[in-house]
Image 1 (cartoon, rainbow, N blue to C red):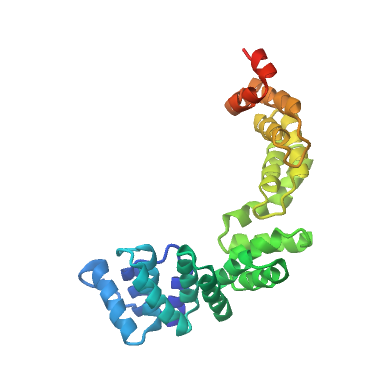
Image 2: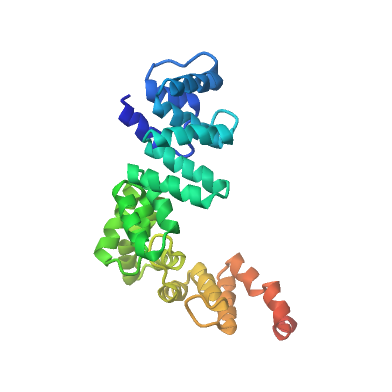
Length: 294
């Protein structure tokens, strides 16, 4: 395996590979070292000391999370810093994660900035999440261009993103391995199905819009879709719309309407509808309804 492919492996695996897998990726010896993971870790340490920057990065990443060897955060930090200074983008990203876990926000941002500049898309995406609005979009664009699906998802969730571009972004995120991207990529198909009277499609599209994980959140539209599903006899649609009214999420607060919807779901055989209809927290807050409950 070439050094470039080895670097791609080290950058693209979460959690990072254990020492033996990393050793084989970097050196492609075709056989396991005797002694298992401790021996591979020792071999990586020796290679690191000999100037093999990928070995420093691989061992540091493994030690940072205890992949195949006991975690050793101080040692991991030193190895990742060494690899990051040597230009290994994935090591800078891993160093940023390690510093963030230790509560060092400033140090984490610096390491991620270095990783992003060196071409690590995940580092760019992490920076974007913490960046002010004025600079986050550019970081999301770079992350997406570098193959980090989180960057593509971040762009797709922006209200100002045109629909055609949004569809392309979620398809790219899906191709890059994002389950959320794959779910969002189904939105046009689900919309067509809902318009054709397919209640499960209305329900699924409502979930995508309510959760807003890969598309802009739209509680009002989600409520309308849940209403269509409920009217078609899907109990889950009634439950979800009832909860939106109960908590004023995209629709007006209306406990009476919520109770009607949850009662309907219960009559349709949905256990959650029955349980939520008789929610003891709500009943304690409404003594009159509690008195009427059998």
